[in-house]
Length: 224
Image (tube, rainbow, N blue to C red; front, top):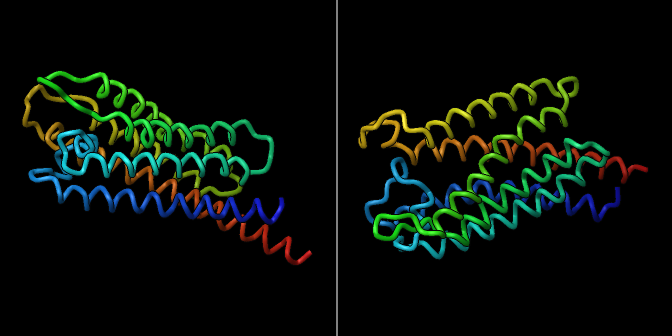
């Protein structure tokens, strides 16, 4: 693999790590500029809705974040330089997450007018849902790429991430109680952020693996 390509793969991995950490920080910082906003009770989408004082800033950031994940997704495929359909699928899942939860959520705001969901809200929900499904499926394909024989710890970690992802997104989306103030519904923001934290830790782990692999390849090429 050429040195220039190796460098781009490492850059993509570093961008992904920085983006995951930055997104969490930006969400918490911007939440402080929205009076009455609760990180535990309110969704991230409501922070970017038109009524929010930080709407445009967060929407712009999500678009940028989406492009970073798409950039990483394309170079992810090049990092695993062998013909494996699971690599291609995992690459597209990362790209879909960037398109849905990143660019799509940034361009289409979750606005409610006169108590009704707007078309923008429906599109926001749809593209965000596509991104969430992509995030949930990623560990199932990654465990086939980084095989059990090569890394049993990562295999177990992938199953844990998938399980935690399913539980948190279920808590976020399913209404267990019809009561408006039930704990499950009251802390939707918490479940959403736990899902995001779980996925970002996994993406960072993948990025570190890719970065270290490329460093070893670069070192091996330099010794030739």
